[in-house]
Image (tube, rainbow, N blue to C red; front, side, top):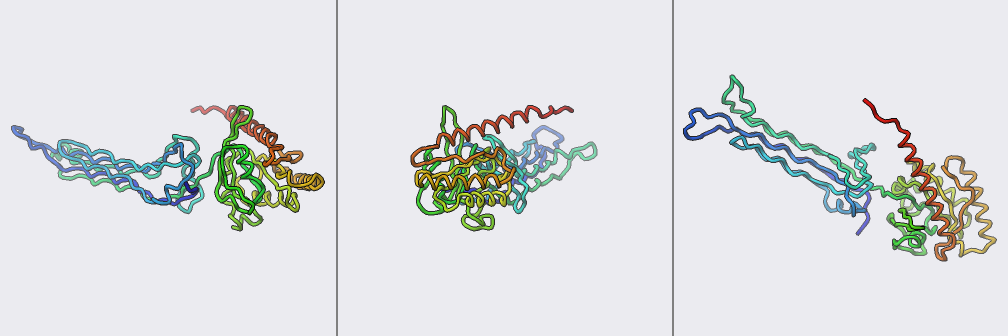
Length: 355
C-alpha cells in the first residue's frame, strides 16, 4: 500500500426532502383534511477515525463524496426518511482543514472520534403542518433546504511516542529495523527513505511507538531535497532521537544543519526534548570517534537553552552491531515517561469546571 499523507476532497451533504400536499380521501368520511407529511432531513458528511488505517491513499482515487437526499413526504401524514450519511473513514492523527485555510476544523487523534463536516438540509413541511383555525385546507408545502458543499484538505500526522531525525544516511532506517519489526528500505545512497515509517519498540516488557521520517538537508524548508513537510509526522512525538553519522566530515555541522531546519519548520519541534546519538560508531577508529564526539558536544552546548531536557553528552551506538542501542532506547523511554507524567500532572492541576 502506498503512503499518502495529504489529500483534497470535495464533499456535499444531502438536500432535505420536499413536503407533500395531500388530502384525505376516505369513504364515509364527510370532511377530509390535509395529511401531507414532512420531508426527511438530508444526510450529513461525517469524518470517522478508525483503526487499521495508516494512510490516506483511498482519497487519491475518489475525491467526491455526497450524502443522500432526504425522502420526500407522502400522504397519510407519512414523513420522509432521513438521507444516508456519507462517512469518510480516516486514520488516527488526521487533521481536516477547510480549503486554503490554516486553522483545522477537526483533529482526530483517537479511534472512534467523529465530526460532522457538512450538515444535511432540513426537510420541508407538508401541508398538514400549515393547518390553522382559519386555513383548514392549505395547499402549500415547503421544499427541502439544500445541503452544504465545500472542499476540504485532509492531512495525516502520524502519532508516535518518539521520532527519528537526522541527515540522509544517518542510520535512521537501520535503527528502526534493528529495534522494531518494521522493514524499511535500506541502501547506501541518500534519500532511501521516501515515506515515514512506524515501528513498535518492545524493551524491558514495555512498548512505545517509534517514527522514522526522510532525511533533512540544508535548505529543506525551502524545498530542497524532499522538503520538510514530513516533519509534521513527528510534531506529536514526546521526544526526538537525533542521529548523526560518525563517518561524516564534521558531526557538529551536521547537528547544526538539522537543528536549523527544525527551527525553520516551527511547530514546536526546536524545543522538544532531544536525545543526540552518534551512529555507525563501528565504522570509524577510536581517535576519529573521540574527535567527532567533542565536536558534537560543542555544537550541543552552543544550541542554547531552547531544547527541553538537553543531554549533557551524546550517546554512541551502532545499529549494525547493536552496541549502545538499548541505552538509547532506555533514554527514550525515560523521556517519554517524564513527558507523560508532566502531562498527567497538568491535567490534575487544571481547575474543575463549574457553572
